[in-house]
Length: 252
Length: 179
Image 1 (cartoon, rainbow over the protein chains, first blue to last red):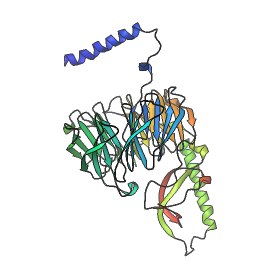
Image 2 (tube, each protein chain N blue to C red):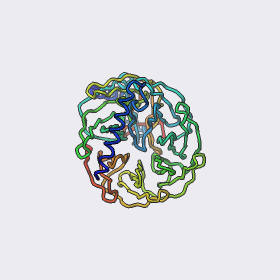
Image 3 (tube, each protein chain N blue to C red):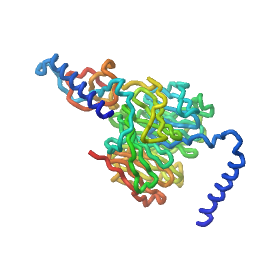
Image 4 (tube, chains in turn orange, brown):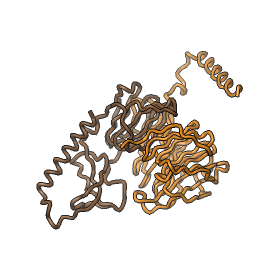
């Protein structure tokens, strides 16, 4: 415990010493304003000095090196039914009603198409961790005739994503992954929690049926959930015994 | 203020409907009355009015965005709740950004990027009580041509009536559009 709390202090002290020593050098990247974090349902994604947005058919690139002055850049045609964008490393994972598309953004202003993982027509947000992408497919009125399921896709070869696992779901919306835990919002039916000890094979550990889940973000042990009933926050330090921290209910 | 404008707009909308009603006899037996979706229009002038107001209750929460200890929760098609989440056990809603037609956002430092119906806006939120739109890129996002549902009927979009910022369910007379 002591080591845990002292070590970061030492490291920051060392960093501070470093900083003061180089105060005359030009501003480094670390002084750039920090980008925030969105959920899997997002159509906006910040990566470095680019803002990527997707609409129904197009990926837009905006240069935000000067934060107050976004400048419109490339427009990339993506096909139809584009739903979401998830930045991971220097790659962009784009969810659409016909599949997941992977773009290389190592040249940030000019994202380059790498591959497409096609599936049946339905809505499909995606999140990525390590070598695996987790994709939920949702059917229903807005999402055509699609099925409801969670797919695990091996993306270790970004040019050739391969589906390795699939689980039936009920009405999946947003999802989020952090370390060994995957959270999947099942819309008004609740929230499912999966153990990722084997990242290729999520194993369901909990199904919280009392929290309606549309968008979810797991971040620093706090799971944020929005749904029809409001904003909920859970402590997931122990994912099997998630603890409700607070809620801001919807008011009629 | 924006609420007032929206209300005024609804007023105008109702007036328009009333005028239409005057032209088309209500009891024409040939009329087909059907439940469907009706576009909610606002004028471009109203659309671009972005304002900060006192905290508002959550009504129809959408996507979430996190920046540091702040949470941003979208109120579908209306704007963004700004929440101080220093203590996740006691989050505090501190302001509401009224942004017509908003569903998405991202934050870099103290700069918030949001969709304002068809436009991308950059909003300086360094002092949340006095937010400023510092840049607007008009017409980057497509206008809504249909509700986000299939197998439904809806009133066709008439661009001359303004920008569509949402859809409301209701009884329609002779709806011409279908999806």
